Length: 77
Image (cartoon, rainbow, N blue to C red):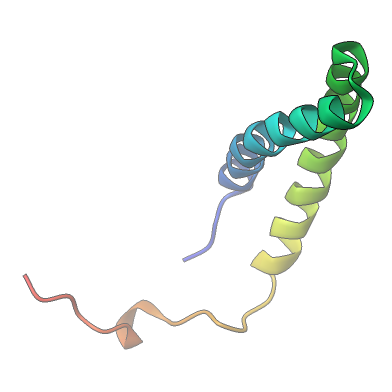
């Protein structure tokens, strides 16, 4: 089984929403300015979605750690 490009993108977006909220919070604690915190968060949101997508696609090409379906233990019902 392989992940689609769309799935990798959606995972990246959902993770970055959580990460960006954290970045905005930390930026506000450090700067004390909401404008700076949201500006930092906005830039970080875009760059890290792109980096995560590239990271996911690279890992999708690595076969290490993948177990074929026929070798996976069967779940008991």
